[in-house]
Length: 280
Image (tube, rainbow, N blue to C red; front, top):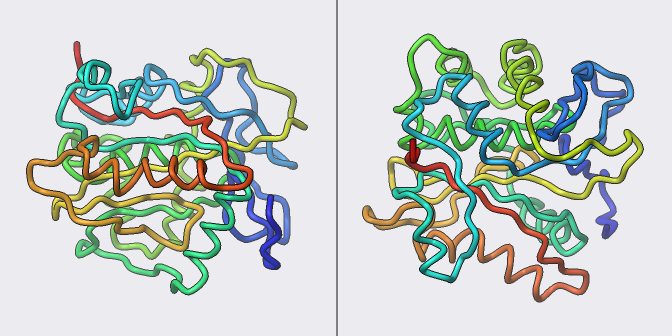
């Protein structure tokens, strides 16, 4: 990973090296025995992009069963894209953390101010990531708590309560809210036991990260990543465009692919799921 000269970035924590061990670590969404959510040093396991596990998790937290996560098998083949129900409200991308990616991230984030907005006037609800191994959960929250999906959350559920509590808070306080939300942690732990991937050892090197792309009510495509300085508006979409439309893909996921193809150490190990109407 390229040395930017600044703090080292943790692929599954905040973008600033902590001065003390993090107090909370989420077990990624793989299949393995139950493990403690609070650990020193933080647990480190490989993440998994499993639409069934993710769907079960967001339903347990309060998202309507009318929505579900689906695999996206191609970005170009119309016959494979046809398997994804429409409209797609959000995409969740898993990608390798390479030096090409880190260079692009630090270059873009460098001149940007730290995001400190709060309140009902925000176009999107963004969470800063401070919990080890929680990038999958952060991606799910960003998908479910924004755009049209937010309107499909049942009242008085964990997601509804989280949104109500988070909206008036600035990002640092929002991060602490997540750190102290036992219902979110327990739901995540339950889902983590239901995946298909066996957990590697705690010493394994992990290089994958989750990022959400969400269409807002104002028809903008937002890149939501808790490691960044804030939410990133990638451009305007037409009213008829969903998050899997050609324009949305060009503004979002295809940018990642193009950058990795052009980079010196670029990789094309990508996985993509879509939040869209359920087939049940």
